[in-house]
Length: 64
Image (cartoon, rainbow, N blue to C red; front, side):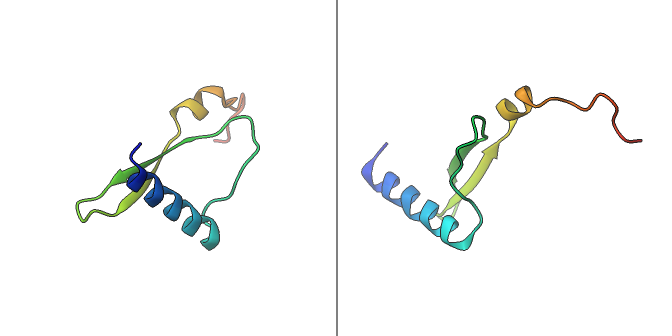
């Protein structure tokens, strides 16, 4: 990854942590976090839950 992009990602992560939107985790599973560039050049946080959903145990008796 380019150093300018890496700096931008670190800055965005620090900002999100300070605002309380995200937090560090030691959980063995997690969702993939991606940053996608918007049309205006800023970064958008996107979360891919597919891998996390694969290991999630579904309820045997879901509520009606």
